[in-house]
Image (cartoon, rainbow, N blue to C red):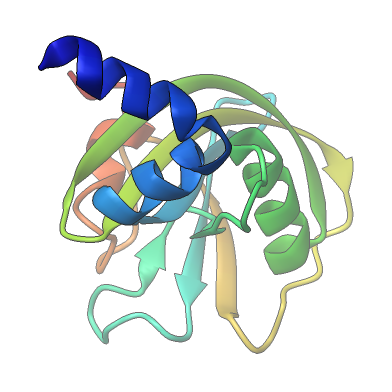
Length: 150
């Protein structure tokens, strides 16, 4: 029986990726950047579309189809703030959220001029890691402290 399954699978080589896609879970991927400046402060944004009382968070957005997640951080930070960043190490990967996967990377400010996207962002602040604004998303605290997910 195993040999038969192997043969059938090999014959289906042109369709294998489609079959695998149909049989497995699909996710959207939320990507976050923990952006720090040369003084060690972290960039926090007040997001217009997030729930009242929890609008403060890190720069984030959804990865586009086929986009490298590091490039998503660069793109989202640029779109939301006008700033340029260099992406560092992966600090969080969480896939237990129904059809959403969360990924976070450290990032270092390279430059650029702060220009907020008024459709998405209400305010931006550079914060000391131990002085985050009220209403910050809970996931931000360990990320800002430099703690990585298990």
